[in-house]
Amino acid sequence: MDRIRIVGGHRLNGTIPISGAKNAALPLMIASLLTEGTLTLENLPRLADVSQLARILANHGVDYTIEGKRSGDSDTQGQTVHLAARQIVDTTAPYDLVSKMRASFWVLAPLVARMGEAKVSLPGGCAIGTRPVDLLLMAMKELGAEIEIEGGYAIARAKNGLKGGDILFPKVTVGGTHTALMGASLAHGTTVIHNAAREPEIVDLAECLMKMGAKIKGAGTKTIEVTGVTRLNGARHAVLPDRIETGTYAMAVAMTGGDVLLQGARADLLQAALDVVEQTGAKCVQTNDGVRVTRNGGAIQPVDVVTEPYPGFPTDLQAQLMALVTRADGVSRITETIFENRFMHVSELARFGAQIRLDGDTAIIEGVQTLKGAPVMATDLRASVSLVIAALAAEGETMVNRVYHLDRGFEALEKKLGACGAEVERISAG
Ligand code: UD1
Image (cartoon, rainbow, N blue to C red; front, side, top):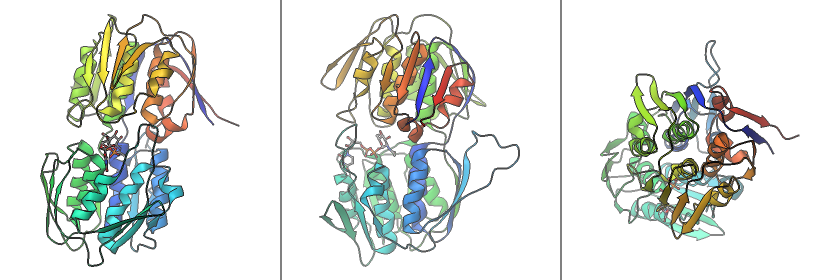
């Protein structure tokens, strides 16, 4: 298994291109199941999760073609991909495929909407908690699907098609909202989604669905109205920039000091997170080319942060922020309200000498002056990158093991950081 070796202590200076958002790319790719037409996605990041989902979709009958590179294209430029589900050849998503990536469960809604049935393996637990799918299934029931759980599979049937319904989510769920949007787009009649997730990736999916002919109002607000249509067509859509990657590199710069342009980034997609980065003492400025992050000397200031659904501070940046404030001049508190077990990075950060105490869903971080490099390993993708942030500022060498987690969600991480002066190399296994 590949590892990443980092020698800390270098400031970051230069430009980091921001990739297309993983969490938008995945539902957009899944939306290709809704139409016989060709869905062309631009700015798709090169990530292990994207390739894995392409395999899952191929199993259902999606033709997946990656457009060739043109001269002058850089390695970091997103890919353009054509997805065409002219015929759905299989409505089952088997365990060995779904268990590798939770989001693949989201194929359920488009398969039922188009084919009247689907059998999708329940995703099971993952490193950050139990992560149930009850609300996704509830949404499908509201749209008229009959659901059975058998042999570890969710089997959903709607022989005469889905119908419009009133979906009230008791808790904000991104996957639930994606599911409701995709199902309702091809249902008979009108659906109202109450307490919908407002994440930018929801808006991105809704915009793409509208280009495909869906009738959606209110995406980005708490109430979304979808009027079903009988068929959707192909479309062309560019994936929005990754706000989690943006926030991660902003925190890396806040950690090491320096001056980096996060090229193509949009501050409006992560204002709450950038506000927190500024509270720690860095500056984040939107320019025509992206977001410029600078920190010139001065101590890292402690913060008090609670993770929340969008537009609040995202849970997907919680681990990275924790890494940053391990070196703050004072005590920080970070409360995780989205996932119950998302503190797996705490014990790994302690290996650098960080002082962190857990009190229920709150981590209390007492800043230390120096971190020291260590061999570490991570259990999920955001936690892995928090270890990279710590390593960039730690004295001496850090070896980050289990790099496959990073490859799931961060495109060309070592190249992007290396180009800005970090001492980082990938050590390939075998
Ligand atoms: C998505 C993101 C993930 C992010 C998360 C929260 C993708 C591919 N993944 O995950 O990176 O951390 O949003 O912003 O976009 N829940 C239930 N029942 C359900 C579904 C969810 O109880 O049926 C709970 C979850 O356990 C969690 C909360 O709702 O406590 C939010 O989860 P959700 O927004 O659904 O996360 P995902 O869509 O899986």
